[in-house]
Amino acid sequence: MRNLIIQILLLVIPLVGVNAVSAQNVASEQIKRSVVIDPGHGGPRPGKQHRDIVEKDYVLDVSIEVRKQLSRKMPELDVYLTRSCDSAYHESQSTDNRLRAEFCNNKAADLYVGIHANALGDTKVKGCEVWVLTLNEKLMNQNKLVGARYADDGDFINPEDIDRNSQGFMMALSRQLENEPYSRFFAEECCKNMASYGLVNKGVKAGTVYTVLYYSECPGVIVEMGYLTNNDDYNYLYSKGSKQEMATAISDAIVTYFKTLYGSESCEVSEAAEETASTQESVVEDSKAEEINEGYAIQLISSMKEVDINDYQFKEYKGKVRLIMGSGKYKFKYCYGSYKSSADAQEDLNHARKTFKDAYIVKYNNGAIVAK
Image (cartoon, rainbow, N blue to C red):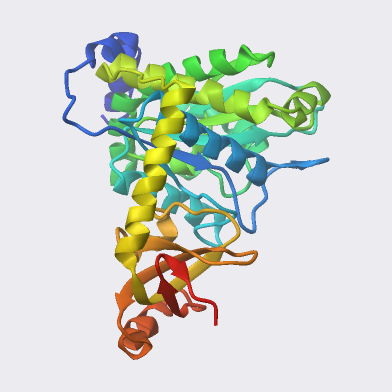
């Protein structure tokens, strides 16, 4: 009976197809749409490394550029990064991937886009490809060896380890029935866009059960921007402007996806308007700095690069973290609270150190850290 149900579900999937995509063009302007961009790897897991390219760094730069472009092309869209610096969610890669899926689910995202680069022992293999989740038993069996070759340990679930009788599998299958047509629609658009920059289009791939896609509730894909181990792909990815071009390919696919499904209009901003907006943002930031005035705060972390205040590492302090600029190499200070004296902050500091062991109390004045 169970196999019959699965077979029926799998037969329905192709019928949903693009018709489901076009039928979903609903007038829902009041609903805030969001996308989660996931730069692969990070922290102790560098991902693929070949010559002068380290995957975790390359994909982070592309992901940040995707967010930047989307803020211009579709400002009404909420864009979240799973990480905005060289960090990881957990020492276990499998757990790390589950937590990335949890981040996506907590944001109630409409689309998940994992960004990666590929590598293979066969240096002749090249091209871009985009992976989607499938729970089609035949495909999983055909591709389990391919999945082991394509993915790092911990990135995927071995199809043989999935309990077909489990509630989790049935929930995933139900989500798959709904999400796969949308995932494929985006994947095809993304492949086409990346190939326009000269990469070989290897197309949409299915069969590998990536952990993060298995646990994500929304449509999602794993984007592979070429093979670092192939000379042609490497030379392109290492070339000046490739990161921006890959970001353009991905961001344009995201815009097309949301416009097709929800009728969202792209708002391409001219350079002049962008400069005006930047000036206005600067005025707002200055105004906020004046409002902060003077006092004490708890510094949770400091960073050489700017970090998204909605980053998952601040989950306990969501909506309460603010950036206070300091000086030196680690000038970006991410702080919590506002106190009249350091003594008033002590109790909260003790709590903060349970998560941020290096947290300490800082004094600020007019939006900047006061040097000791």
